[in-house]
Length: 232
Image (cartoon, rainbow, N blue to C red; front, side):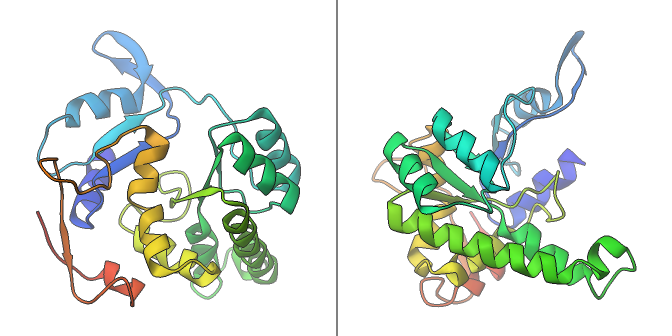
């Protein structure tokens, strides 16, 4: 599954993968988090993304106000999902330097299941999912207004999105109110900042760089990021 996801990411133009926790498995005679072995196997390998692996899970994700409030007060580096924020939480995140890693793609994905599956969770939960998505987008606007760093994610591997669907999150961020260039920043150099990787998502003179050529101008049409023509 990891190999398939790595290929999907690479072909969709994604060069860095951030893993936030994995089960432990015997690797090389030692029990380690599965993604540690994947990271090591892919290091320097053409056709696979660079991986930042957390190892064993060390934090909770936060989707509701009680969770995001605790995360902000604790000064965590980033809040994953963060579907519900208020102005006070956003202000505290900005003051402490915390980032918001959005995953609105998950909610968009759930909404598509409402007409393609018979599972009650999706067929009967459309209104609730729509409300959650609206709340998540309002939370993005609160974070943006407070000066919180916003990083785009998809929750693939654990959620319903797939490894090549990061452009969906770009669209979601624009829909939430970010300018296209800000949404692109959220999935490039802002992600690098969060990882502490100065070369991730950045093009600089004499530095390393990966390129994705797309049909269209993503600064005016974010959907262009779905139309990868070539990766280099």
